[in-house]
Amino acid sequence: MKTTQLLIIKDIQEDFEKIKIAAGMIRSGGLVAIPTETVYGLGANALDPQAVKGIFEAKGRPQDNPLIIHIACTQDAQKYAKNIPDSFYRLAQQFWPGPLTMIVPKRDCIPIETSGGLQTVAIRQPSHPVARAIIQQAGVPIAAPSANLSGKPSGTTAAHCMADFDGKIDAVVDAGSCQFGVESTVLSLAGDVPELLRPGAVTPEQIRSVVGELKINPAVVSRLEEGAVAASPGMKYKHYSPKATVIILDGDREDYLRFVNGQDQEGVFALCFEEDIADLKKPFVVYGRQNDDLTQARELFYALRELDQRGAQVVYARCPSKVGVGLAVYNRLLRAAGFEVKKI
Ligand code: TXA
Ligand code: MG
Image 1 (cartoon, rainbow, N blue to C red):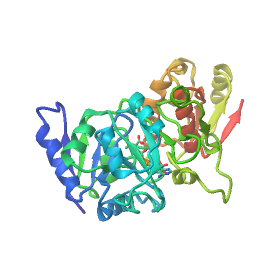
Image 2 (image 1 turned 45 degrees about the horizontal axis):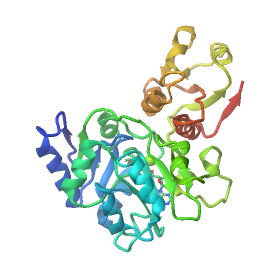
Image 3 (image 1 turned 60 degrees about the horizontal axis):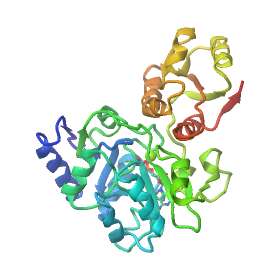
């Protein structure tokens, strides 16, 4: 057991000593959960194979699932990647710092542990000021998957990180809850045509406006077929799942309310929008507002964890819009539901 320090950052200037402590831990091979604008990340020095192994152990993450490296300035990308296409820089210009991860061929300095055995590397420049300060102070790229035990909903608060990693990592840096609440958009630039591997707050429409043609990997909205090779190893694994059985109800609001109110099993919960509360006769957990995909994204993982805490057994979820940031919300909810969608 380690003693996990909680480093609370209220003001980046006044609390700069704590940023330095976190950065020092990472530089010297430690594991630190750090806030980003998407979700909390479990960070380690991306260039240190031993430290990176620690991430996999703490999360219980399969070793073939590669990590994203986080950098503080766009120019650093060329230290870790090669054959970087022009589209990378055009996208970086538009969306960095921010919730976009781009995959390009890796250089040898990126250990195979970090890239999960692949010859490519995923790179992101986060916008969260605390994340940026920690990367800068550490002076190394930070490998950071979402800060959650493998298979569980990603951590969006320091309390989530503590719940999953207390006693297993060196520190948790607490800077409040995350702006977006779902992980970054993952885009591969390693093939002929840019390909969306995971939707996020940077939408397909926004990416197309910069690169023109964009492929959407089929696994974004459907179950990977048995034996198929995943473009992104993360697609293969069960994810975001609370203990309850989650079923997405795809239909309009009236049908949703009628269906849920008509259930009489024990432990039924609604995972619904704020507007639904007044008309529901079952226990519920809210994830955002009906026509506001940003609030849905921000609250989804929090809501999934809350369902566990409240002992939900069967959860009927309202279906998000599937466009814009709604596609990211739908993608996460689909995985939480093990792809169970019921048309109503
Ligand atoms: O917002 C985020 O992206 C957060 C924060 C902490 O930055 N990080 C995050 O990391 O979500 P993780 O490891 O939970 O998800 C990264 C995804 C995984 O599905 C992984 O398989 C995929 O990106 N990935 C990473 N490197 C890849 C590569 N070289 N080729 C294909 N997929 C890759
Ligand atoms: Mg993750």
